[in-house]
Image (tube, rainbow, N blue to C red; front, top):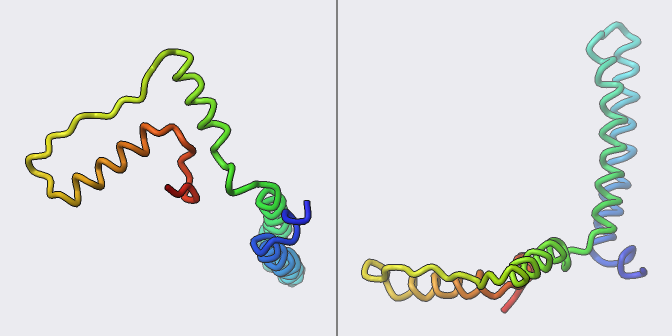
Length: 127
């Protein structure tokens, strides 16, 4: 629980929402004063800015409660389980290598191995 609220990532999100929320409310109040001075379009903006503030709080909440190490892992495990229950083996496509250089072939082999591995495909996955 403490890691969720006090990690480096979370502290950055806290600072962002602490700047975003009052900034949006301030912009909304400024638009209210402009609307009361006769600017008709500012009535719309005076409603939009508080909505942006609430959207920012919602994004902050979702980001705090999302674990970046497991994003997509549940769906990936479900897909692998469904494929294995159906008896579908991972398919590695055959390629023609006559026009590939050695580095490109090694890179393509690496991608094929990762695709057949069945692990979660996130940017945090290392090998």
